[in-house]
Length: 343
Ligand code: ZN
Image (cartoon, rainbow, N blue to C red):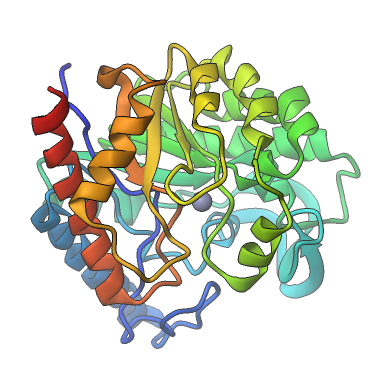
């Protein structure tokens, strides 16, 4: 099937309205509970579907309005996870502390995880839809294991569950399933050794398009400080992209605009669709369409135009809502401008 040149999309999350959850927080508390919360999540999802369409994006997501956090949203439906007794753990190689649930027994899905939001999304847009799930390696890095005792075994157990949910999402009508693996940029050797293998297990047998998002994290202070420590050139992708290029995953989402990633590393993804980050999620300054088109132009030196998909660098969850909306518009307008310039 053909798609428009420079088909645009978001990495995943969008800010939650203040009536749904605490604004501008990464792990926000819900403002409601029970049936009211379920309705409010659906309302917020509808609102963002409309906003993405109005902005002019080509591929629409649910903005992750129904999950408190991109990893823990999935884990809440997994048997064998103790959410009652969260523990403080340094995550992403101790970059920052998080309160994480514990793996206490054999893992099993309690049932469907994201059926409601995926079906809502499918029912309310005619455009292509993308659904995001956390990748196995990133999940392993965001829980405290008290049962498996081996990161690879644990990752494969999660991959199995992710695969079940991914197949069901495909049956719900999802066009693109994207796994989020920020941990790939932290444990590069392990990512190449077994992270990509676990990811392929999670995507096994899917007939829809498969994608992976690898980033330098949300625009929170701990990440801003970490990025400042990474030096002039961020070459993390260099260690992981060759393994991904050989994998069955079809699309790779990466950071570009305002990052210190040498753009020529995109060449390592020969044969893949490349979701190029043209929107900075760590700055409140809204990009101009010209800047977005310029970033696309720069990436075209390394990625064939049929394979280039403009995207945000990461999720927009902890951002100001109005700023996020303006950034979606800049993304779509910049993609349209690039179509004029580079067609
Ligand atoms: Zn990200």
